[in-house]
Length: 115
Image (tube, rainbow, N blue to C red; front, side, top):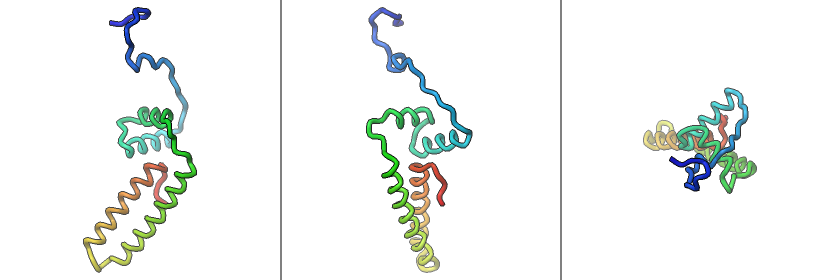
């Protein structure tokens, strides 16, 4: 077992001696957890650490542009679904699946409910 001052290597976890903590509402915590889950993280603390420490954090303006583009795609899918009702069941099912995936992506990047 390594002891203080013995010169042995420490694990990365042991080297990280500082703690960052902040308070959030229950709603904010739920939003962070949902977003972390949607992005494939095992827990919300790993997600928060990764977002806070990554080198190339995504600025908010490009995210707003992505959300706007996703909304346009959603509208196109919505219109396509309306026009495909009764004509081609397979096409309609594909459009529904695409729309569901689009909602997942939108929620993952914005944490918001689809409007």
